[in-house]
Image (cartoon, rainbow, N blue to C red; front, side):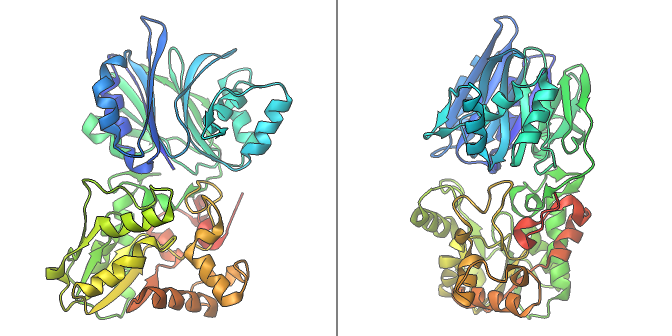
Length: 469
């Protein structure tokens, strides 16, 4: 996915920028970049580093002094090297994006045919942030250029633009990814994660609306384009991506996870001895489940964080399997003889479950029950790229549907319908595959109610295939 942070201040901004970007680190694992504008030297100070073998702070801490100026933007990227620095008829500017553009080849061809040239490649592919910049450059001003991006791309795109005197923040046309504004004395900031604000002294001002474009300096904010009415913010922000202390559209991540677990715990009739969350995003749900089911919350499994990254970081599936197994350590003392119930955010490829369930039994668990915060992922993501980096067949559900139907595309709407015979068969096959005592997924109604927004404002495509716009 990715996340970004931008700040305009009345004094040197590098400290706020450094920590603000770092607080988005859970959103991406490939690259990070920062850029400031030095008004005294009339230049952009930029740096980009790979995060594939280390963490953000270790790459940028030693070079903080180079980021001179009182205005800057930074990004944690799961895609291409960013920020890109551009010199165009709009002036000099730097840009970062959180984007997933599915028609990139079509747009590249269109631009090349019109005589536009690309200067950036990432692993032999077009850098999509540069593509966005080139689409912006076709406008008479930044507002028209950003609207051109909205009109041309399929997928999603939110962005921050650093000019020589201000920051422009533009949220995706349907608000699929968030941008939240914060303010403190002498500074205004924009970020993907409100978690970046409290320790830096910022108070939340407001969320940008879908398609809204604003420009800000340390002295104030100017709306360049009013928000649009329709919104399809990604529901998976609350299920998986979001940090527990973050809020989107005024809805807190941990509060949502607790509510979804509590709702499941109150209706579940399964007898268990304890509830445990699969770290990190399953913990809030498990705490809610324990409260709703009136059983103790116990840490039967813990995450070893000093050296093991997230399981989807390595590109090789065998390495993902290894990381998934090695980073979660079962606690025999807490598992021995227990009917243990575990809560997790989702089942995508089944990487984590593949080895960890057998390890739980091996370490003394009498029963292993699994509860999932969201419905089964039936459809690959078209808008953020979370579930469809290669094909829908990476999804465990699609492989099982192929086994059941002989065709991974058959009867998908029935497999997505909670309680249907096809749905029940799918859940049972997943349970059997991993040797679980029982398995349940939260229905989409519970997820939507826990988030607290109308379903028409949420993107739930990966669960039910719905695409409202």
